[in-house]
Length: 335
Image (tube, rainbow, N blue to C red; front, top):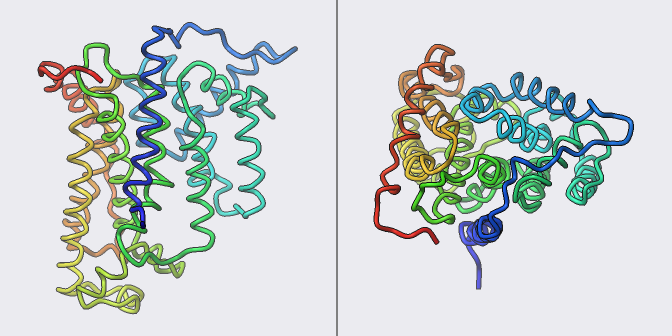
């Protein structure tokens, strides 16, 4: 029996949720564990976290903005948690990634989770996974997404694209939930919160794909479902030509609608987190879809973006949403 990509990913979600629930039942407080200090390097860990924050601010501006509403402890841990693997996707060395480099990083990742960091930045991630119920699988899956990018430039249907989106972005949501923490007064199930974080990752990547159609085409890549392009009467050649037509507008409307559906799913659960930072990501990132529409669906030569003032304005909105969570007043019991 063929298992859909959605089911494969859901199995990972259940595993992550079970890990968090197990730790919640122990009543352990992850914020008070001592830092990992390597012999003779008392300030090393602090420097490692500072460096992670600097690179995060440079290469993941929206994510960095979102961390501003987190507690200092959770903020530094989440940046260290995400950056050390996500640098493979968006960091300064992303264009030089090779299969050998990915194999080497996966081996180092396993050492990190065993508490054997290789260098200063590894120490930040090793410290984070010692404090919070973070599992290695999403990190390994992100590396698998990078492998996919090296060998694949077309996706025959949305099932294939969904798996890719999970690998390179949905994993970030699963990595972040244990660090951000679920609000103490939340009545939502752990699985539903993880599903929301996953949905936000998928929505973010779909948005990236729609924003970067022209840029990707110039690299010979088409991150759009081939069967849906064919149904719309479009070919890869039409994308390489970069001409906005009525067929393209209709096709893009359907793609944007799907991305917004994932954002809607995400917003149902992000208010259950202790931090409003995920809400910021949801609000800011979905505005890119509005900008694509404002550009008359010309994502061939015009890159949709959200201005810094609009991002800053998202802060109070996200905070307001974070303190008004419908499920916290529901009668559902937390699983």
